[in-house]
Image 1 (cartoon, helix red, strand yellow):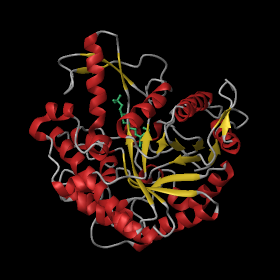
Image 2 (cartoon, rainbow, N blue to C red; image 1 turned 90 degrees about the vertical axis):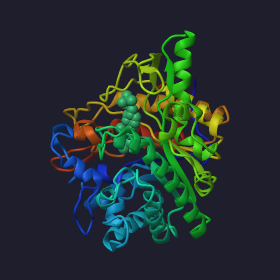
Image 3 (cartoon, protein in one colour; image 1 turned 60 degrees about the vertical axis):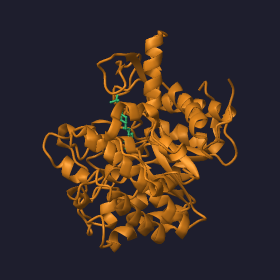
Length: 446
Ligand code: GBH
């Protein structure tokens, strides 16, 4: 195929999230979040792991910035812990928390790395969960006020903001029991989704008022659905699942929830009021996309709201038991571009967990991860050639970290973390990624 060169200015980065790496869960005035509460509840997380210490990034921030510099990263996507800067979620500001992120931003800028903060990566202040959490419509305004605080403190230096990470997963924390807060209340998930959309929109409006020169977008995750067979029934099931992916992008880019959701959920799905629509449909500077795998689906009248059963992985899998299917990223980019016509797209997460081992010579030869990232990037290259405006890519993740319900059992990092010593060790995938950044491309056959 030959060397695949990316467009000039293509932005190469890596991503993390606050609860997964920071630790210091109750230090310097931080309030608890629903993930602190959840991980402290016996039985919720594999091996009883918690994010209390995580990668100790809160104390090792300068070292981690030096590592990013060494790898040649051009951008760093991190998230801000809402209860670290507003312990109760509303009201009092914790200046020590704001200072931590301010120092992080300054440290990145000093090394020429573009700070790309996400305002919400799942760690709702516990105090707000006690007031009803995201299913409470007031949560939209609480979020916007917190967002405005961060815009006012960091907007002079941060140029690119992400409002929410994967609102589908946030809503699933209310629908199901595997992610915080784990309510197991399906109707609450739909209400949470609604507040998330409105909160996102209000935050966009606040940024436009305060820092119109800054850019803002949202990060959505999608597992594209492919029909199991070419029967008309399976094709229709695949189509319904694909339409249902519109839960978050459709209100933002097309003005309302997809018809399949209205049909499936009836009155349980809220309507958008006029002011809500105005907020939710605010034009965005970019769309962030996360992708890890795909679903193969089959028609099944008894399966879920869309009569589609998700089949087991159809081929080799990662440690998460997710099918290794790099084409899904390319297909997703084409689909989203066609449906939503975003001005710009950043791939804000993509990567893989494998059971890495440190060889006797001290190297981590994570060939599976390297090949997965390489093949996904080939798909990005192909999408760009096909006219999709992808302007950057963030690998998940910079560091091995707390993988939510899986705790530390799953390693997604391009850099290994030794949880005994907290030492950071770049894996072979990190070396390859550095070289790719330096060359602004790679040879897909190597
Ligand atoms: C992202 O979530 C997160 O943003 C990040 O924090 C996390 O560490 C990373 O990915 C790796 O997991 O049950 O077969 O339907 C990904 C969340 C998990 C959402 C899998 C979709 C569907 C799998 N995704 N889930 S399945």
